[in-house]
Image (cartoon, rainbow, N blue to C red):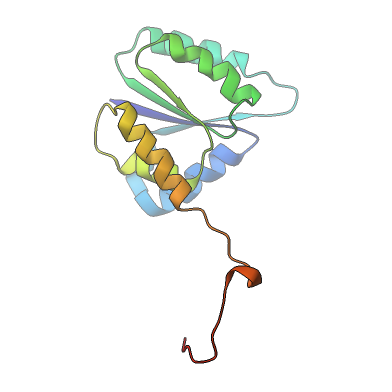
Length: 138
């Protein structure tokens, strides 16, 4: 089974799960969240996960908010297990793609596609970036 964990500073992971569940419904029920709050350390969650993963045959995909942040850095120590993959730069497109992917075990190329798709969903729209011609109709 593929276990997806959204991990963040504050409530971003909970908000992400709420938003994603509006689109994918029951597929989001399998997702766990971890939120780090001021005064807490991610090491407690790391120890809990380490114990769980060490006795599991499940595949774990942990999606962190910020690369190099305390959540990402601490949970990256779980890479000692072959059944763990850590992603950073959590966004809704990435999480949706991950949940909609029916593969039990994703390959490196699948994760690279997830990241590329998430990047492709980013854009800038500003007055300077839009050129409207008078002859164009909306």
